[in-house]
Amino acid sequence: MKFIDEVTIEVASGKGGPGCVSFRREKYVPRGGPDGGDGGRGGNVIFKTSSRLHSLLDLKIKTKYHAENGEPGRSQNRSGRDGTDLIIMVPPGTVIKDANDHVVRDLAVDDEFLFLEGGIGGKGNTFYKSSVNQAPDIAQKGMPGKSATVNVELKLLADVGIIGYPNAGKSTLISAISAARPKIADYPFTTLTPNLGVVRLDEDANFVVADMPGLIKGAHSGHGLGIQFLKHIERTKFFVHMIDVSGVSGRDPVQDFKDINDELKSYDKAMRDQEDFAPLSPRAQIVALNKTDVLSSEEIEKLTAKFLKFKSAGKINVIEVVSISAVTRKNLNVLVKLMGEMVFDEKEEQKKDAAATKTGRARARKKA
Ligand SMILES: Nc1nc2c(ncn2[C@@H]2O[C@H](COP(=O)(O)OP(=O)(O)OP(=O)(O)O)[C@@H](O)[C@H]2O)c(=O)[nH]1
Ligand SMILES: [Mg+2]
Image 1 (cartoon, protein in one colour):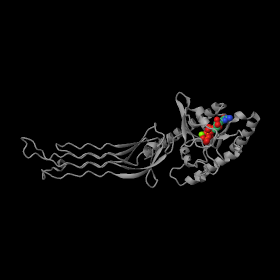
Image 2 (cartoon, rainbow, N blue to C red; image 1 turned 120 degrees about the vertical axis):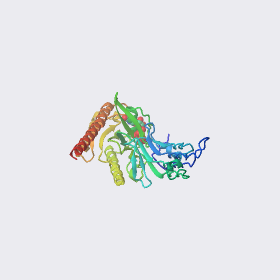
Image 3 (spheres, rainbow, N blue to C red; image 1 turned 60 degrees about the vertical axis):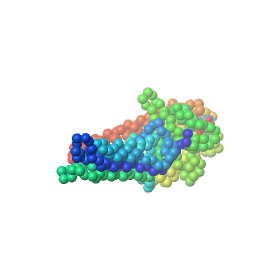
């Protein structure tokens, strides 16, 4: 299935239906008064999230979307029917931007957003009846709807991003720790779009990981698949940085690690003027030294020591270094446990922060 994460569409809310001019015409009711009903309201344009969607593919099918117009009012004081709302379903994490790319609403936070209201219906002539004008023959037109061009952008919602060079074993890892089954192959750039997987810790605790397409040196200037997909890890709490330490790649694992971190920095630079941008390079990383099934324990120890130096140097936010094998599952339990702790620690922190702001607000209110 194709993965689409940016679309531009035109949307319009419905026009209000016109009010009706009508007079009662019934047997035995001479000179029946006005009985023209009001027009119906035009349909709204609403964005709504569905966790069953993971791409904006559905919005690629057409570019113009229109909510229904309100129906005209009718005689016997009957109101016209309201136009049906246009409900545009998008995946959670979708950002609605205007034509100038300003964020209008982030649907990572809300799950429904009334974007454009439909025009209100016109009043029928009954509305204009007064002591001085018993037989008004005027009615209101309905109000026009609104239209807009919107840039719809998806930024996936995941707790953890798995990053690293192509072939490092990122997809192998996600398929070993979650039910996701992305393509795995012995050549670079097997993964072309991000894959999400849910890691279950126990009955009621789970978190979402995103397996990313591989990055290479120079990605920020368009090498490989570029850095376009990095927006999908902007919302993650931390990264698992996968390093192929088997030696098969012919590259130096430490250099690989530095290269990818440089790419994160370049991405941050390129994005720094974007609204609500949270930089990637300072984010916490668990370094996962992968493919250690082909190494001796001495070699593993040496490599681990090398990478632990990054942790003590503090320039890159390395939280821990774990040597694993995604294929033989060596130490995957250790890695998953650490990931779980970091996800849920972070969630606790967020809760505390939210509670603190709430009590802060309550205090401020009391004072006022
Ligand atoms: N020996 C060994 N091979 C592994 C291990 N993990 C992954 N591989 C192999 O490495 C190759 C690449 O694995 P993938 O999971 O596709 O790598 P990736 O990082 O997702 O690669 P891209 O999608 O291209 O970025 C495959 O042939 C895997 O079988 C491991 O722990 N040990
Ligand atoms: Mg892959």
